[in-house]
Structures are given as structure tokens and as C-alpha cells.
Length: 217
Image (cartoon, rainbow, N blue to C red; front, side, top):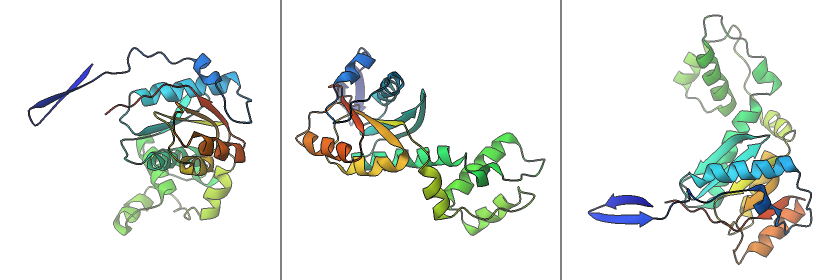
């Protein structure tokens, strides 16, 4: 049981440490597409375990045994999807040819190069920050264009998205497909389940209802 004291009052919440998440739980697939490979099931389990320990509302993206984006603590579930999606974009764009071709000065250390690549991808630097950032390169790179993001993100496929509670609306599905999502894991149980499943069908996604709500406040 988790305890938290606020203003002299003590709140208790039963934790989820004893809840075991397995690939067997992912076999309830209400979507028309029921092609759920073993690797996708493992990614569903991984993402679900990860968000089991994050602040609700929360979602997580996973692929090939890796967590690539987590969005937590938002009042709106679709905002979690967008927040985590930004992390997915940064992760995948690090493999863009323009990012791989950045020419750093020899004295720039590894951590500095990592941070410089991330800021290059995010692209929202102030004028002062940009001046300092540009000093790290032998040749200052041209900024990434919207077409660079759009075309490169289309090459990302097979991603799993897991949610700690049901999706109340289809908006999360409409957003997550921008980030290569093919597989969905969620508890189900919403009055909007049919509409969310219909959205998954429209994008040919595979959705699992595992029945385990993982709220953590």
C-alpha cells in the first residue's frame, strides 16, 4: 500500500506491485486485424510494466524490447500520447541522414554531441542558445525541414503503445499512428470501446484488451 500525507491527512492507495503482466493477457484482440506476433506481445508487456510504475495518466511506446517514449502525469490521455510521441520522434530522428552527418569539432565530447543532436532535432532554440550551439560544429548544419520529419517518421513501423487505463476517445489512436504504432495494449472497459476499436480498424492496428487498470496517483 502506498501512503501520502497532504495537509495533515494521510491517503492510502493499493499499489500494483503484486500484479503480474503476461503475454497471455494480450490475447484478447477485439480488432479485425488479429495478427499479433510474439515480439509484439513482449513489447506490449514491456510497455505495460513500464507505465505500471508511472504517474497516471500515462502511456508508453515500445519496440524491439526497448521503451522509446513515456508520457505521464497529464490530465488528458491524448496529451500523454503526444508528450511520449515527442520522445519517439527525437529517438527516431537521430537516425536521419542529416543528423548522422553532423560534423562536430574534435574537442566536443560525447555527451555534448548527444545534447547537440537532440537540440538540432527539437529545433526550438533561442538566438543566444543557437549561437552557442553552432560553435560546436566544423560546418554549421542547415535546419531540419518539416518534410525531413514527415518522410523519416513514415519509415518507423511496428511500434507498440500501451495505456494505464482505457482510451476514452479515438483521438489517441488518431495521434499515435504518426509515431509508427501498429499494436495497442489497454485495459478496455470504456463506454467508448467500440469507437476506439473502430478507429484501430480504420488504421489496420492490432489492439489488445488485457483488463488490468493501472492507475497510480
